[in-house]
Amino acid sequence: MAGSRSTFKNAVGAGVLCLLALSACGTDVPVEYEYPTTGPNGLPTYEKQESLAGPSGLDLFSLGQGDQNNQGGGGVAVNAFLWRASLDTLSFLPLSSADPFGGVIISDWYNPPESPNERFKVTVYILDRALRSDGIRANVFRQTRSNAGDWRDAAVDESLGKDLENTILTRARQIRIQQASQ
Image (cartoon, rainbow, N blue to C red):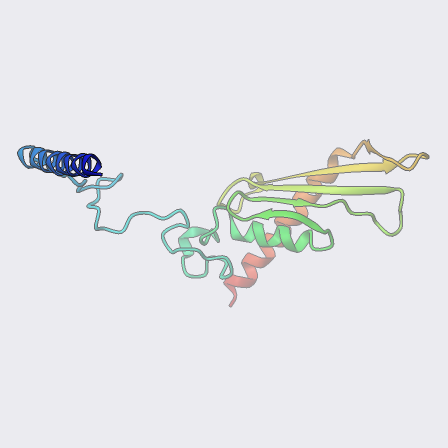
Protein backbone atom coordinates (compact mmCIF):
# COMPACT_ATOMS: atom_id res chain seq x y z
CA MET A 1 0.00 0.00 0.00
CA ALA A 2 2.82 2.37 0.86
CA GLY A 3 4.43 1.70 -2.54
CA SER A 4 1.31 2.61 -4.46
CA ARG A 5 0.95 5.87 -2.49
CA SER A 6 4.46 6.95 -3.32
CA THR A 7 3.93 6.02 -6.98
CA PHE A 8 0.74 8.10 -7.02
CA LYS A 9 2.51 11.08 -5.41
CA ASN A 10 5.35 10.79 -7.91
CA ALA A 11 2.89 10.69 -10.82
CA VAL A 12 0.98 13.73 -9.52
CA GLY A 13 4.22 15.59 -8.94
CA ALA A 14 5.45 14.79 -12.44
CA GLY A 15 2.13 15.91 -13.93
CA VAL A 16 2.26 19.22 -12.09
CA LEU A 17 5.82 19.78 -13.21
CA CYS A 18 4.87 19.06 -16.83
CA LEU A 19 1.96 21.52 -16.63
CA LEU A 20 4.19 24.22 -15.22
CA ALA A 21 6.84 23.57 -17.85
CA LEU A 22 4.33 23.69 -20.71
CA SER A 23 2.66 26.84 -19.47
CA ALA A 24 6.00 28.53 -19.09
CA CYS A 25 6.85 27.79 -22.73
CA GLY A 26 3.86 29.76 -24.01
CA THR A 27 4.94 33.00 -22.36
CA ASP A 28 8.19 33.31 -24.27
CA VAL A 29 6.64 33.09 -27.77
CA PRO A 30 4.97 36.28 -29.02
CA VAL A 31 1.63 35.61 -30.69
CA GLU A 32 0.32 38.05 -33.27
CA TYR A 33 -3.07 37.87 -34.89
CA GLU A 34 -3.60 39.62 -38.19
CA TYR A 35 -7.17 40.07 -39.27
CA PRO A 36 -7.90 41.00 -42.86
CA THR A 37 -8.94 44.61 -43.19
CA THR A 38 -10.22 44.33 -46.73
CA GLY A 39 -12.63 41.92 -48.35
CA PRO A 40 -12.49 40.31 -51.80
CA ASN A 41 -13.46 43.53 -53.62
CA GLY A 42 -11.00 45.73 -51.75
CA LEU A 43 -13.78 47.04 -49.50
CA PRO A 44 -13.19 47.20 -45.76
CA THR A 45 -14.54 44.08 -44.06
CA TYR A 46 -17.03 46.11 -42.06
CA GLU A 47 -18.59 47.40 -45.31
CA LYS A 48 -21.53 45.50 -46.80
CA GLN A 49 -20.33 42.89 -49.29
CA GLU A 50 -22.25 41.63 -52.32
CA SER A 51 -24.79 38.91 -51.72
CA LEU A 52 -25.62 35.82 -53.73
CA ALA A 53 -29.22 37.04 -53.87
CA GLY A 54 -28.20 40.36 -55.43
CA PRO A 55 -27.95 43.88 -54.08
CA SER A 56 -31.62 44.13 -53.12
CA GLY A 57 -31.78 40.73 -51.43
CA LEU A 58 -34.04 37.83 -52.25
CA ASP A 59 -36.99 39.07 -54.29
CA LEU A 60 -39.10 36.23 -55.63
CA PHE A 61 -42.51 37.86 -55.94
CA SER A 62 -42.23 41.53 -56.92
CA LEU A 63 -40.85 40.80 -60.42
CA GLY A 64 -38.18 43.47 -59.92
CA GLN A 65 -40.57 46.38 -59.32
CA GLY A 66 -38.14 48.02 -56.91
CA ASP A 67 -35.24 48.16 -59.37
CA GLN A 68 -36.13 49.35 -62.87
CA ASN A 69 -32.58 48.85 -64.20
CA ASN A 70 -32.67 45.17 -63.37
CA GLN A 71 -35.01 44.26 -66.24
CA GLY A 72 -37.11 42.06 -63.99
CA GLY A 73 -34.22 40.13 -62.46
CA GLY A 74 -35.08 40.76 -58.81
CA GLY A 75 -33.18 38.54 -56.41
CA VAL A 76 -33.55 35.61 -58.75
CA ALA A 77 -30.50 34.76 -60.83
CA VAL A 78 -32.59 34.71 -64.02
CA ASN A 79 -35.07 37.09 -65.63
CA ALA A 80 -38.19 37.14 -63.46
CA PHE A 81 -40.50 37.82 -66.41
CA LEU A 82 -39.22 34.75 -68.24
CA TRP A 83 -39.42 32.73 -65.04
CA ARG A 84 -43.03 33.71 -64.33
CA ALA A 85 -44.03 33.26 -67.99
CA SER A 86 -42.47 29.80 -68.06
CA LEU A 87 -44.39 28.75 -64.97
CA ASP A 88 -47.61 30.20 -66.40
CA THR A 89 -47.13 28.48 -69.75
CA LEU A 90 -46.28 25.12 -68.18
CA SER A 91 -48.99 25.33 -65.51
CA PHE A 92 -50.93 22.40 -67.01
CA LEU A 93 -47.90 20.09 -66.56
CA PRO A 94 -46.94 18.43 -63.28
CA LEU A 95 -43.57 19.90 -62.24
CA SER A 96 -40.74 17.67 -61.15
CA SER A 97 -38.28 20.46 -60.32
CA ALA A 98 -38.11 24.26 -60.47
CA ASP A 99 -34.88 26.06 -59.60
CA PRO A 100 -35.19 29.89 -59.78
CA PHE A 101 -31.48 30.41 -59.08
CA GLY A 102 -30.29 28.06 -61.80
CA GLY A 103 -33.16 28.91 -64.13
CA VAL A 104 -34.25 25.33 -64.78
CA ILE A 105 -37.82 24.02 -64.84
CA ILE A 106 -38.32 20.29 -65.36
CA SER A 107 -41.78 18.82 -65.76
CA ASP A 108 -42.83 15.30 -64.95
CA TRP A 109 -44.32 13.11 -67.66
CA TYR A 110 -47.73 14.30 -68.85
CA ASN A 111 -50.32 12.12 -70.59
CA PRO A 112 -52.75 14.16 -72.67
CA PRO A 113 -56.31 12.89 -72.03
CA GLU A 114 -57.02 12.71 -75.77
CA SER A 115 -54.04 10.40 -76.48
CA PRO A 116 -53.39 7.94 -73.62
CA ASN A 117 -50.64 6.10 -75.56
CA GLU A 118 -48.21 9.02 -75.62
CA ARG A 119 -46.68 11.27 -72.98
CA PHE A 120 -44.55 14.39 -72.92
CA LYS A 121 -41.90 15.90 -70.69
CA VAL A 122 -40.58 19.48 -70.93
CA THR A 123 -37.35 21.08 -69.71
CA VAL A 124 -37.02 24.88 -69.83
CA TYR A 125 -33.69 26.67 -69.34
CA ILE A 126 -33.65 30.41 -68.66
CA LEU A 127 -30.20 31.49 -69.76
CA ASP A 128 -30.06 35.22 -69.11
CA ARG A 129 -31.18 37.97 -66.73
CA ALA A 130 -32.36 40.06 -69.68
CA LEU A 131 -35.68 39.62 -71.46
CA ARG A 132 -34.27 38.49 -74.80
CA SER A 133 -35.29 35.92 -77.36
CA ASP A 134 -32.07 33.95 -76.88
CA GLY A 135 -32.51 33.99 -73.10
CA ILE A 136 -34.64 30.85 -73.05
CA ARG A 137 -34.38 27.30 -74.36
CA ALA A 138 -37.09 24.64 -74.23
CA ASN A 139 -36.66 20.92 -74.87
CA VAL A 140 -39.64 18.64 -75.38
CA PHE A 141 -39.39 14.87 -74.96
CA ARG A 142 -42.01 12.39 -76.16
CA GLN A 143 -42.62 8.74 -75.48
CA THR A 144 -45.18 6.33 -76.91
CA ARG A 145 -46.54 3.16 -75.38
CA SER A 146 -45.74 -0.03 -77.25
CA ASN A 147 -48.11 -2.97 -77.63
CA ALA A 148 -46.28 -4.64 -74.72
CA GLY A 149 -47.18 -1.68 -72.50
CA ASP A 150 -43.72 -0.18 -71.98
CA TRP A 151 -42.77 3.40 -72.88
CA ARG A 152 -40.34 4.07 -75.73
CA ASP A 153 -38.73 7.31 -76.85
CA ALA A 154 -40.33 8.80 -79.93
CA ALA A 155 -39.40 11.56 -82.36
CA VAL A 156 -40.52 15.09 -81.55
CA ASP A 157 -41.19 17.77 -84.14
CA GLU A 158 -38.24 20.18 -83.87
CA SER A 159 -40.54 23.19 -84.12
CA LEU A 160 -42.35 22.18 -80.92
CA GLY A 161 -39.51 23.45 -78.69
CA LYS A 162 -39.28 26.73 -80.65
CA ASP A 163 -43.06 27.19 -80.48
CA LEU A 164 -42.92 26.69 -76.71
CA GLU A 165 -40.08 29.25 -76.42
CA ASN A 166 -42.10 31.77 -78.47
CA THR A 167 -45.19 31.21 -76.30
CA ILE A 168 -43.12 31.82 -73.15
CA LEU A 169 -41.55 34.96 -74.65
CA THR A 170 -44.97 36.31 -75.62
CA ARG A 171 -46.29 35.70 -72.10
CA ALA A 172 -43.17 37.35 -70.59
CA ARG A 173 -43.76 40.45 -72.71
CA GLN A 174 -47.40 40.54 -71.59
CA ILE A 175 -46.36 40.34 -67.93
CA ARG A 176 -43.79 43.11 -68.44
CA ILE A 177 -46.32 45.40 -70.16
CA GLN A 178 -48.89 44.67 -67.47
CA GLN A 179 -46.38 45.52 -64.72
CA ALA A 180 -45.29 48.74 -66.47
CA SER A 181 -48.88 49.95 -66.71
CA GLN A 182 -49.47 49.56 -62.96
